[in-house]
Amino acid sequence: MLPFIACEKDIQNTYSDYPAYFVCNTVSTIPQLNAAMNSLGVFCTIRNDRGRFLFTDEANKTTPINATAISSNATIYMGIAGFIVGLPNLPELGTDVSTPICYDLACPNCYSDYNVARSLKLKEGGKVHCVSCDREYNLNSQGQVAKGNGGISLFRYRINYSGNSMVINNR
Image (cartoon, rainbow, N blue to C red; front, side, top):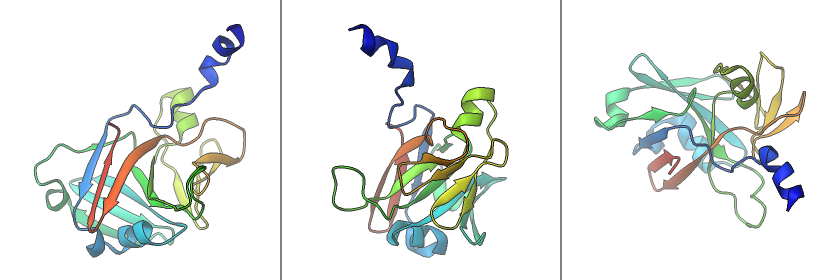
């Protein structure tokens, strides 16, 4: 029993406990989000900026959408720093088909170590980079550290996508 207790603090839950709730019923009208939800290995970020949601792709092209057009007066929780969403080019272990995935836009190691929300920079090839700690994370491999000092994987949220609707939450 002792070996299991000793490793307890090294275990990372699959899904984050940070508040996350975001609904978008117009996926097909937002080019960056539509590509991320329907193309293998493509990702986009979602940030809240002064009453607008900004959807940004790997090429740094952004589509701003008025928050009231998305929220419909519902309460929105953007995790720590926003979201990274997409369709990994590798299915998760135990599955044959890739399904959409969602991570927090904050560097998990900077946030865990210093309680500071350092936003990650989306790069081509399904990677994100933290300029503060110089870690790079692989979005196609469950958000694991791909470059730099080891550490924890990206914080993850549940995501459902069907038709033209996407729902992110941590429940």
